[in-house]
Image (cartoon, rainbow, N blue to C red; front, side, top):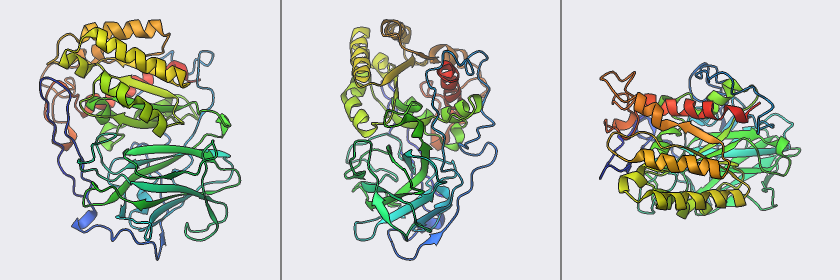
Length: 442
């Protein structure tokens, strides 16, 4: 697999990463892509042990005692387990179809080529009978930011697609298929998509098959074409027609974009660690990070994030590093964060705010964290992890096992900058989040 290097640009002590991951086709040629004719079945198998974001999550770091399993204080009562791992999968083009549901993200995955309305690409998963409502999320092959300007090359995301369902197909190509409808009765047919990952819930009563049909690539797609790293299907039947309980959207800057990409070097993920601690639970998570963002940028795009992700309940707001780096002032930071909190609460969502991570080249972060503490108390929020203390305590010495800013280990050619944690630190962030959120789970 050919992979481009990640270029990290840090200017004026601000988290700005001009990052992309070109998950190229194998052997330099690539799948012929875009053809909708002869289709080959290819059953996926779940990753064993610690490989990928496997549903069992057995190798996740142990959370602190006294959190998960408390039961009485839990706020998430109804799990939404993944029901797609290891299920039969079929695709056109068929090459690498078994990577669609193997629990390995952000790795190029299934290559759909350059599909069109006349020659669509599709991937279908046969589920076990039973769920009456499911949540399907897809993750592209390697784009870094959640959204990019139209001039920026993207690595895998589709522009136009729809989600179909069937009760009688045998191979994804035959049988009767209808377009899935969201809980408002609207057909799930997306045009002009600009996000690297999306999710959709829909009625699944009497159905056993789901299919993602891709009919267009964005004009700024890389030469590798559309690439889907993973498709997860969660059973959200317990939510009825309401908002699923265990769904997480991580907003923030480049640290967020790196930490929650669920790539192999950042495992175990938040979801996998929670699953290991709370039997039967498996959070649905979306990485909504964009390099260089301030709280003002987050506020400007929050409504769009809500529109794109109507089924996500918890919204993590990981802002403040770039506010401090730009010296925008704590009062501006507080105003922006308050606006995001009130917007989310008015929409029936749950905001969660962590302490801003320690950074070696930015002063004054502690004063912004004081604002975070005020907001948590003012709005009675569930507090996020204390990333400041953790990274301050893991920032010294010449050993990468204790100094979690040293590169290597840093995937994609990143360099030590004392702003972005290395891969050990990014993985630790996932565990710290799972530990902090333990009281939400039974």
